[in-house]
Amino acid sequence: MAGSGLAEPDQRGPAARTGADIWSQVIGSCDPVTGKNSNRVWPMAPDARPYHHGHLRPALLAAAVEIIGEAGPAALSLREVARRAGVTHAAAAYHFGDKAGLLTAVAAEGYRLLGDALRAAQSQGSFLDVGVAYVRFAVDHRAHFEVMYRPELYRPDDASVLRARAGTARLLYGGDNPGVQELAAGVAAWSLVHGVATLWLNGNLPERLGHDPEQITRLVATHLRAPQG
Image (cartoon, rainbow, N blue to C red; front, side, top):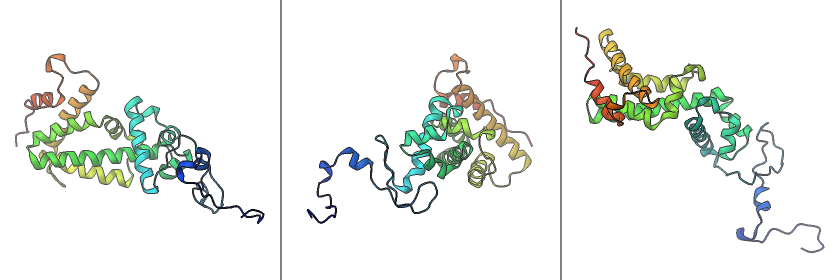
C-alpha cells in the first residue's frame, strides 16, 4: 500500500519475473554449510539447476560417472562434480565428504548394478550367460568398472561396498560358502571374463576375434575347463 512503508507483495506471474528474481530466491533459512538458521538469501548461479533434496545425491553420482567415463578416475573432483550438477561444492561435500567418499559411492553402485545384471542372467540362462553378462556390464558401465577393482581409490571397507560386493561374490562363486574346488572354479571363470572385458576395453584383443565382446566371451569360454575332482 502506497505511503504505508510496507512492501507490497509481488503480484507478477512467473512469466513476468526477471532472471534476477528467480536466481536470488531464498532456498531456506538454514545455512547450507553450518546447518544453523541464518535467514540469509543465497543467490543461485545463473546456470544452477535446482534439485529436490532427495534427488541431489543421484545427480552428483551421475555427474561423477560421466566425468570418469570421459577422462578416468584421476580427473574426478568434488568441485567439477558440483559444477556439472549445478550445485555448490559444499553441497557435494555434505553428501560424500571428499573424493574418496564419492568414489566409494561409485564403487558401491557399480557392485549393485553388476549384481543385478548377473542375477538376471542367472535366472534366464546358463553359467556362461552369467559370464557374458559380466563382460556386457563392463562395456556398458565402464566408469563403474574402472573404479570397482581399484580399491586404492576408495574405502573398500565401507559398509555399502561390503554389502554390494558380497552379493556379487555369491553369484560369481556359486553360493555363500562354496567348497574349495567350487571356489577355485568360480575364480577361474571370473578371471577369464574379467580378463576378456579388460583386454577388450583397452583394445588389446586380436582383431581376428572380431569386435563383439559378447561373442568373443562365448568363444573364449569354451576353453575353460572345470577342475577334475
